[in-house]
Image (cartoon, rainbow, N blue to C red):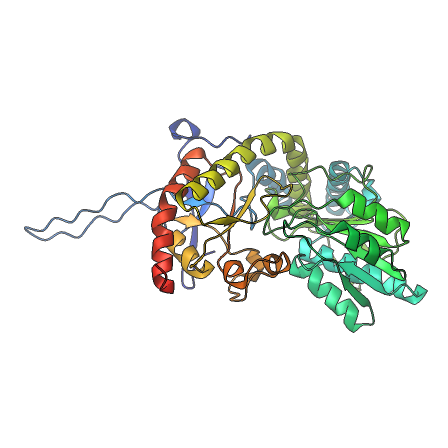
Length: 445
């Protein structure tokens, strides 16, 4: 994210033939957003005066380790979208040829998204992203069922704030809020889940598939079956899961699933919301009949087309993505622990998706360490990008029983299409000096 006062531009990366350490993934975008003044910008010619020589070496290539926050738009996605910004600009609700053309594209995109989820086209709703879908699932499901006397909403304390705050809102409207216990490795305590979900009066349970801060994978299939046996609706935020693990409505009995496009190479501002056929849902918005009234408003055809292409590619490349990224993450974690032995990798004992490494180092704080990394051209985050600027300890790590000082020191390094072995090795080499500097800021030796 650029600092205040900085502008964005695009810098063309070298052609693949010139890369000394290519990305192991099936694609590596050729154009990457950069910040004016970042490490990839050509250095300005040094000012010289007679008798004065200034050494100005070429800064190192920037390293993007924040793929869990967002990913670059894939070239294939841009290509699929581009016609709908120009000649094929019609409103899909219009009956003339431009409208019919847009409607055909939207219907095809819905079918392709549905195939990616193992669903039927009428079970797919396009949203602005994961946050809207999460709110629609929690509040839309709860508001329908509360009239039937089902008032309990079950979730976990490690959810994205889009779910947690929607659950809190339901509680303000009369819901009974139940938050499941989480074990120290970041997984839901299943004994507690069976007790709370089975305690009666259940309207809905919502559990994140892959945690956005630790990468820990939850036992979603078992949780969904327990919830269905208790007579409730089951929702999973699959924003970090889709493209890393299989998300298939034919195999797991979830009722709602949220997907966000910009996590898988589509633009920001588009997402998919799965609604199992026949599931009751109250809309959040009103004023139109689009999307069967579940999400009224003129559809974003270009972005829906782009999302469909991105989701298809994510499914096709899912296994290759895992095989490429997991060794890089393991290499990174092993190198960090070798160089900084008192570092702590959160969730390492649990089953995890391959792209997230959450690490804390005693005697540091995340803000200082992230600033130090940024000055070296390394992009990372303190957890959820949606919570940037927060100075409170991570609610995810706190729920896992991590000490407050370590929770406040956590940074998230997330890997993806732009990550190479050279990136991993450089970050590992930088880490000890950056830790020493961060500890100096904190007054720790």
